[in-house]
Image (tube, rainbow, N blue to C red; front, side, top):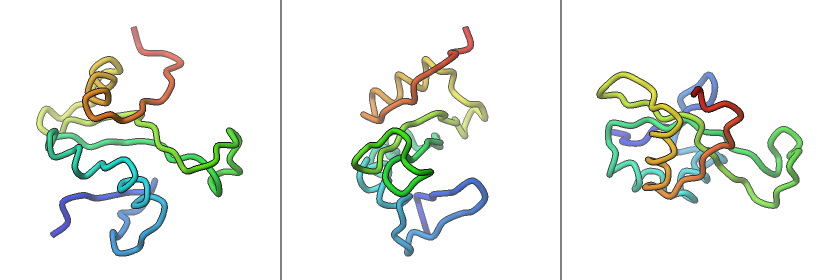
Amino acid sequence: PEDLFACSRNNLLSSKKKDHYWTIADKYKIKTKLKEFPNFAIQGEIYGPGIQKNPLNVKDKMFVVFNIYDMKSKRSLDYYEMEEVCKKMDLPVCIAIDKGD
């Protein structure tokens, strides 16, 4: 059985098809990092070449986290909690326009 899942906006994606979702998961070692936080699900955004015309003109596909859901407590972490977990996981966080203070 799978122990890491990747989803697009509308679909569960097969790990057998090595698309940019799985390339990012490997690049950022997400499966390994989630072993320390098994109750968390990460939502993020992939950007870069070949994605929505790459308006930031980055040279490589990149990833930022915008939400972490705690499946045990059934809630999304607030921005500051998410930022702290991402720091521990060494994952980039999206720039916040409003942190909900």
